Length: 338
Image (cartoon, helix red, strand yellow):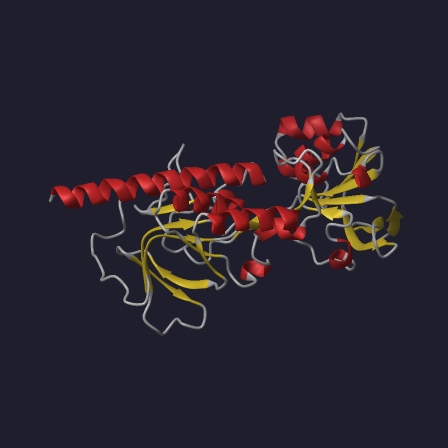
């Protein structure tokens, strides 16, 4: 894919880099490790509470991570991200705990500005890797903050096998394919799964809806919403639910609540400059991390609306690093030949 324009701008006198990584989750740090080992001196902006997350992204809000290879006993999410960070630093990545708030992808080198420095001289980079991630949409229910990751999750594949959910009644909120997939997956672990659907029909595809309704371990609660998450202060043990047709409220004793209402990719920074899908995810050339602008790569959940796993994010971070390295080498060879 070609850049938006063939124009060029001068390199920054403040700081110019061959490659800048925006984002500090598994994708960003994996890219940093590969690029640093290739002696490209990557600069990684881990952000300061960017998109509401501490440096390290969504994994900093999780407890036990049991499906990341290499940790047979599991590892805490924040601890895993600390190890990612340590490895990036070990190989020479320059990590900056600031947020990139503005970027110009219309010409190379690309220009970008840090938060609160938007009116100052920009810094520049030959290539950029966008690894800003995505965050689960929340409902803002009473008690949601208290029991987030203490009974409430937005990823059944990530958390469904956690001991607190095993052989316990669970609930899923949503009516689309994601909700159907998550509910079906949770039947492997929970004693029973309730699916709360606001409407009187599912938005899921026919095959997924049929699978959901035919599963004896799943009960669909139509025209139903959750109004409050309750527990003992440590773990969730009950939902207050409401029938939107009758107005009747009641308790639904569950030990786990899984949101399947979508994610919000953190693409506001680049959405007007890169090709994105209707949900805001960055579109990449199939089989690569190349975006619609030459020299800009996207890795991790910011371009992955299907898998959204730490391991797949790390894999795409590796891809982005190798592709950026290849582009830089090709362009340097081209300059030398001239």
